[in-house]
Amino acid sequence: MDLAIRGRVALVCGASRGIAYATAEEFAREGCDLFICSRDATSLDAARTKLEALGARVEHAVADLATPEGIAHVVERVNATYGKVDILICNTGGPPTGATMAHDWAAWSKASELLLRSVVELTRAFVPGMQERKWGRVVAITSLAVKRPQPALVLSNSLRAAVTGYLRTLANEVGKDGVTVNTVLPGFTATERLDDLAAANSARTGQARDAIFAGWEAESPLNRIGRPDELAAVIAFLCSARAGFMTGQQVLVDGGAVNALI
Image 1 (cartoon, helix red, strand yellow):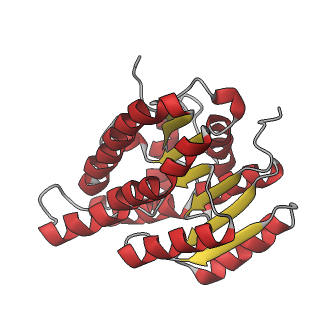
Image 2 (spheres, one colour):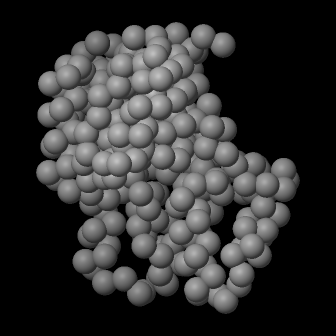
């Protein structure tokens, strides 16, 4: 399927590994020009090399999107390199685990900077240009926690919901300009983040790592966890010309783990 996005400029955040890297691969195969960023310089360089091997133009910046300086650096570099963004994929690492009242306000503020501020600032930087050109795609990678809060993940449960509310409101405002805004909610997917959560859950509950993964697998009717490329395929479709009538949605890609009708 031709997604009709060849030549579009895609900014993929946190793209050194995992779901965001797999998404960048999808865009590379579709002929997009890429800008990727991450905190990890070594992994980012490796990602760039692999993406360039697919024939894509790839620029990159080492940046921590949990800081104003990191956000400003990415915005400056993207504008200097391409002068625009057509496709914005918002994605950062996850905040620490912990019980509901275990985090002080400093932890809440730090998590807000990581999860919410990065989305707000990047959309403020790039969506106006999309509106002027009458075409744009914004997708944020959030979590199934938006639909079903997870134990010991109160920071993620709360702030990813805030991101969802912000982007749903933005979708209402910019749709008339040809800009779609959606979120993708990954379920349990084979990434380093899931390994970290398994380790935290094991320390908290005393369960063995293998038992924790078996429990996650059993939650899906498919009896497995997801692969990053399966999430990436959905994200790429949402950014395509073919998905032009889909906006303001929270797309759950969890193998059916959230057992609900809506």
